[in-house]
Length: 451
Image (spheres, rainbow, N blue to C red):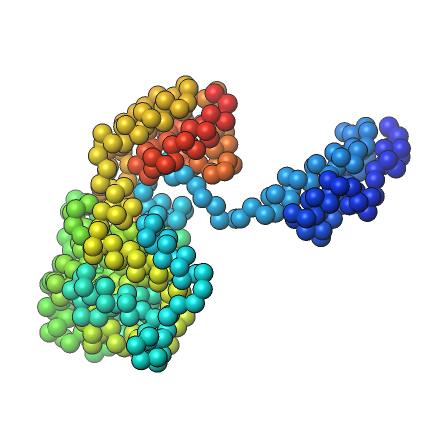
């Protein structure tokens, strides 16, 4: 056994280390308490290595102080960081879904830097509604009589059912009892809203007569949920909103339609219903997300007839799921763009790119690195929207001796982190969600990976 007493005795005390100029500089940047703890950790690590025999000589003071820099910098690094999305999925839920427009980012900064008229009417000086500006824009864009905004799409459905069901029955097709990301299940939301679920039809076919036969004295709501993130094909049929609306009116029941994606204008994915079309077809309330095809921040939108929206405003649940000022600012800015300049919404630009544009971007990236080839790929909108729409795209195929998994891990550890796609053991960097501004950083990140 090697004698460890001498190296252990040679380790300096924390106080001596703190008195050194290099440590004083760290204290001025990171604070004395953080530097003290980092030095203690470094000394403890050195002791353990000496006792284990893996370190024969005690590190000097300069080495111990230098070893603290990385851990101190890691303490300051934020957990939520910017990444470059090279997955080929525009609305990647794990990556924050829709990127915001510069106008939305500027609106956030403006209201975040001081006070704002969140709940005050500037004309009268009295208390006002925090969502009034949002509601006016939503009505203008969709033709709705009234509108409301909450903090996400699930909350929008929960609020609607809680306010309208009154503990009664909610009728829904078995084919629409979907589960989306994060384990969110429609049956659970119905139950949480205090309603009793009544399933009608079968998984693949639900007819109008199925709904009609299920309506009884305790029925409170007819609910239609857009399948969003999957499609049933083959021997299938579903009941259209217009048919359900007529049935709902005949029985004086509200029809709630959740569209999920929040599509305002037709164009990308014409199989997706727009909010305006669902309202025109007779839905009393339409709910959707704000951070999917709308291209805004996380939010839940509720649109429809004023007589059906008003009970939601007075429900106690609304306060628990309301939007904060930053989300409201971003949502208003995004809606203004949809009204005046929809092409400036980043998601609209992204999904509207031509295959030629994507190939040219891939070629520019290829010119920045060595050992890469190009490949035509299929990309997706993602985020539970347009599941059948495949977007022609191009990707850079990164060839490396260390393997795709290890290379992907190294890219994720960078700053900014890069999230790529692995396909059949190959590392692909799809250009759909990569901007021209990302190329220099992406090239540098790839160059840092061993070829």
